[in-house]
Image 1 (cartoon, rainbow, N blue to C red):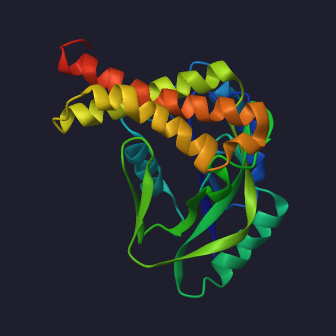
Image 2 (image 1 turned 45 degrees about the horizontal axis):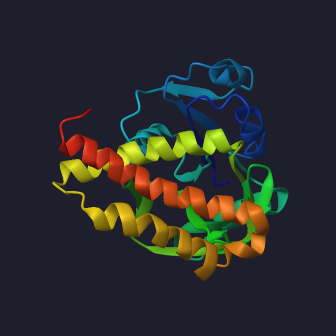
Length: 249
């Protein structure tokens, strides 16, 4: 029987980690790769009989690729701590590894929840990520919004996992600040500069795309807040780049 290694990257995920681990209990191996959490993440995970690896965080791709290299089994399922594999998706995963039909990986669609509210629009209706794949054919690339680079055919699972991405508005803003800092540093290394277009045009344009073009207004006030914070994320990375360009760490 084909076996699966499930990998969960963590940093201070005490409110999520137990349910995340339970949702991949079908896996033959569960690895928690932790960036030295300061809350009870590790304490909780240790009670659930999983393999724990501690590694200093450098970027999202490196963290996940390192964990993939430590996995025992050839099929990998990557689960962010704020995601939950539903029973329907679990059945699809097990069937996919038994009969992959020449696919070396599979996209999984996600149902997005923002501050406890289900978001149906704003671009979330098209949200999909590669989560299930053969380790010898797939690796992560990218500093922040890391993606799978695959050397073969990718299929799709039909059902969706639940994605409880942000537990509060403050939590969301803290993540946007973190992502913005990483992206700003990446742009700085690439020698990019900031101009008024990046500050005055790109953030409002991002809001317009998520709220109007991608129909975020259909989600009511949560859709407005979601679009607003997407714009904030764009602004944050260029502020960080501007600071670095001016010698401010």
